[in-house]
Length: 373
Image 1 (tube, one colour):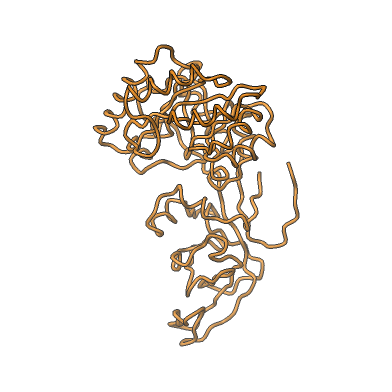
Image 2 (cartoon, rainbow, N blue to C red):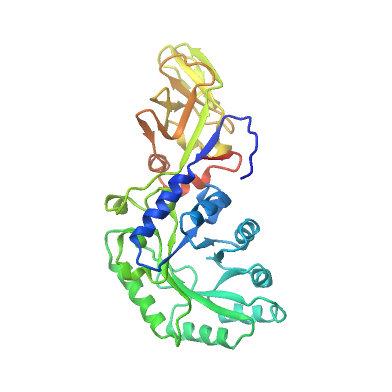
C-alpha cells in the first residue's frame, strides 16, 4: 500500500480489520452461495475506495459496486480481476470503455441501448449489463412488465452485449413499517418472474435488507454498503442487528496552541464566544475545509479522556475548544472515535448536523489523509 509522509496532525484513521470483520459477519448470515457485493462508491463512503475494496475482497466479497464510470475506472486501475458494477446511469460514450475494462453497466432504457449498440460493433469483450428495476424508489429503472420485456428482448437482439444481472433498490428497508417495502418486493418478484430466462445475478438486498429481512430476499447476491463500515442504516435496524458492527473510521488531531483567556475576552470570527470566566482555550488544526463544518460549533471533542466543546465559529482550517486545564502542545484530540472511556460516534455528529450517519464520513474532505491500520 502506498505510504506518504503527512506533516499536519489532522488525520482519519481507517481500521481495515473492522471492515473485514463486518464482511465476515455478514457472510455467516447469508445463505450458501449468496455473493457479497461490496459497495465502495463515493470513495468507499469517505473511507478510501482502493484500501477498502482490497480489504473487502480479502474478507470474502466477490464483486465491487460504484456509482459512476470514473469511480469504476479508478477501481479497475487497481484491481484487474473482480467484477465491478456501476449502479447509476452511464453516458453512452462510456460503453466502449466499460466493455474494454470489463466493467458492468446498469441499463434501464431501450433508447440508451440502441445508441450504445452503434459504438460497440468492434469490441473484443461483450458489454455486460444489469437491468435496473424501479420497484418504488423512483430514481431510475424500468417500471412495468412491458418495459422490462422490451429491454430484455432488445438486449438479446443486440450484438456484443450480455445480460448479466437484474436488480432493484428498496426505499424503506431500514424502517419498522413494512407496507411500502412489501409492495416493492412484490413488484420486483413479479417483474423477474416474466423474464424468459433469469440472468446470472438477481440482487435486491441493500444493507438493511441483508441484515434484518427474510433470507429469500438475498437472491444471488447482496449489496453491502453502510454497515460494511460499521454504521447502522437506521436507529430501528440498530436495535435488531444480528451481530455487532465494528466502526472503521476515527478522526484525530492534536492541540497546536494553548492560551489562557480572561473573563470577557472573545474567540473566533464575529467574536461570538466570550469567556464567561477565566479559562483555557486550545486550538486544533481542523476546520470546515476538512469537513468539520460550522454547524458543528458546540460539538464536543475528547482531550485527555474528557469531553470538551468546540467554542466560537469554526474556521476554514482551525477551530478552538474550551479546555478544563492547560494541556501540552501536541495533546491528542479525538473528534470521532474512542479515547479512554469516552466515545464520539458518527451518529452523534449526524444528530448534531440533523442528518444521517452516511453523510458524515463523506463530508470529511480529501485534504484529511486516510491512514490505514
